Length: 304
Ligand code: SF4
Image 1: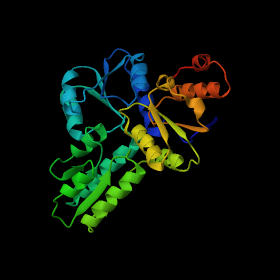
Image 2: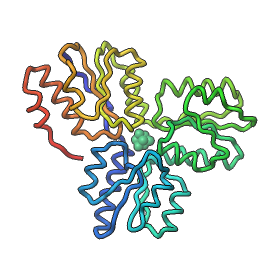
Image 3: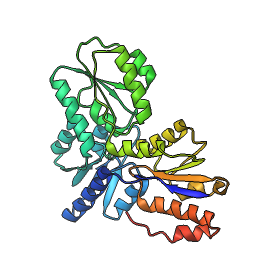
Image 4: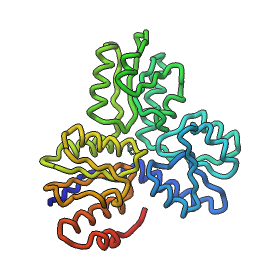
């Protein structure tokens, strides 16, 4: 069995920065309650590790960030890497909370672009994942003039009558799927101005999978809530890799017969801590070399 560790993989600059901001906030406000609205990044091992810094996250899949804020009545509120809308920021300020913004610069850049086109009277078509906080923050900018598109059915159902249409997307979509969706919109609205906003971290991680050759198993490590993680697995499947395993940790591989494969590739989503990836690499190497896999996993140092 040959093991290929895909590069780049794991933490992106936006996630590194968000974690750094959260830790710095804990240092700066040692006596204040600190709450993250939602999950700082989509990985529960990061969320759990932040509890050691007195930082709590509040999340509910049925509640928007605006509504979640009702649960925060004192101290500091940190906005996650996925971006935040001005409505939520203003509400936090009205409540007398100290706000800290850990939004990724790439997300802010897409928000700024949308503001620019809204100012010029464009109608916005935004492709994203339903109920994702990044999409929620974008749509919150202007719910009347931003049309949310989650799939091809939504494109078919569009009924926009305007010369000024601007089309863009969530930063963590699949590079293959977004191309087809943007083309489909361009066919329907040839006048549309299009800007593909998939971020560099998402793009390069997906391209690295597309470049792989003769792989019979791809292991993707990441949280099932992480869109970029899910897209890595999807790209692997679309590329025709027969066995794609999306696992949160090495525990998800224990019932798999990895020894049957010739070439196993390992990658990880942009919010997956390195130690979870290192555990998987150590486990696969132990299987390859006929060593004790559990001992190999336990030898990996845990850190965020
Ligand atoms: Fe930013 Fe992209 Fe990382 Fe999301 S995946 S935090 S948009 S760099």
